[in-house]
Length: 99
Image: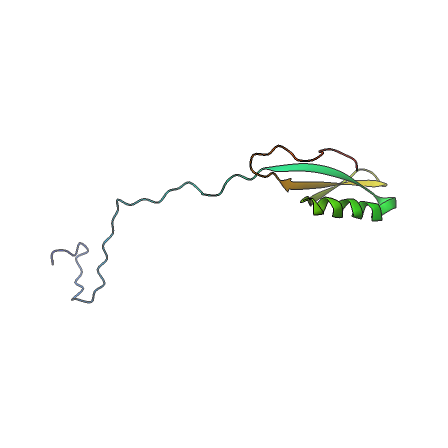
C-alpha cells in the first residue's frame, strides 16, 4: 500500500486525491430573524360589498394583507388581516372589529 493514500487504492498520478480538514465546522444557527405580526378583523357586509371592498383596499394600502374570512351570519363576514411589525414596534393600528 503506498503511503499517503489511506484508502489503499492507487491513483497512479491522476490527481484525484482529496484532503479533508475535519476541524472546520459550519454554524447551525439560522441567520434570519423571527418575524412578528399584528392582526385585525374588518367587517364585510353582504348588503354593501362595495363599501367592504373600499375598506379592504384602504387597509391594503396601509400594509395589511387578507389572510382569512370568518362567516358571522348571512348578512356579514369578517375578514382577518395581518401585517408585519417593524423592528420591535408594538402594534401600529387599531386591533378589533369594525370599520
